[in-house]
Length: 359
Image 1 (spheres, one colour):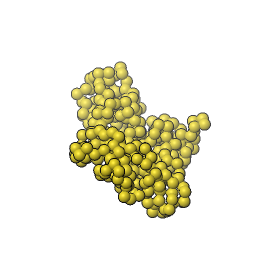
Image 2 (cartoon, helix red, strand yellow; image 1 turned 90 degrees about the horizontal axis):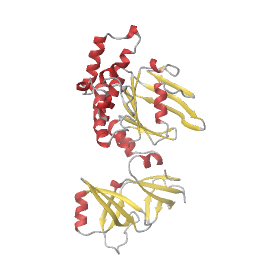
Image 3 (tube, rainbow, N blue to C red; image 1 turned 90 degrees about the vertical axis):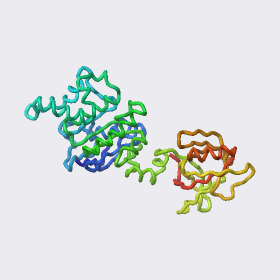
Image 4 (cartoon, one colour; image 1 turned 180 degrees about the horizontal axis):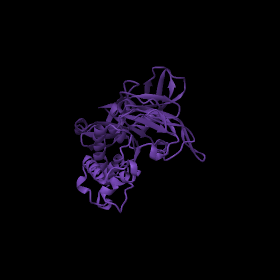
């Protein structure tokens, strides 16, 4: 089922949570709402669910205006960060709860409820825990039970609010893969809120990046990562080196480094070049050597750490004394370290320049 929000505005006192937000979520897609705390992503999710009312704007489900529909009429499944399971009930009874609460005329027989619940528990691979209580489960298991309970009522839309936020890193990673696999099986239109960039990039079909109650950018994960359209998205999504400077002669000059500007840029305008750590190449140089070109920097090694196949380097710019980060294959860095190299020429290979103050 498709979801559309039109010109949603929501105010909490003097704080604007959402400012004229309009979005369409495609039928059967898994979309991530990504952004820093307080950007409005959870408020938008709750408005879609009917748990919160907008001050103005519309929510359309399958093309029909559901703005004033009760939460129970929207057929929405909601999964919270902290599970919200009934501690006094077994796993089976937690999943069956929504089915048993339906009006009598719409309620399944107890035999059909049992069969459906067991099917769902098999789907989330926890049928063997049907008689346990939530306190006996791990965090990851509880979250899967919460998801099974949300799916039990056959929602037209599945909404997840920081579903893995309370779990440790390894469990989160396992559940991300599991959620993606489950979605590929069910194809329920799903929206999940997260502030975890890796989670959004790994799981979602599409990412909506929000900031200060507005949509900064949306698109496929790889497209948003490779082609950020605003300084905020550039600085928020992934790690970046920031080169602050001003425009002179059609280039952004940051210390001794110059970045070419295809459009020229306004003379003397402030700007910032954003360069990802893996987009900087380095080669050894003698301490007395000066960069041969304006597109190079002379740097010295400040700190290095090898993490599996990759080495993370902190390098000190010798023109401004600022630190830049470089990521390179560990084997390549081992060769440089074996030669005793401490001084390098750094060449940014790909930069995105935005004018004005940096994010």
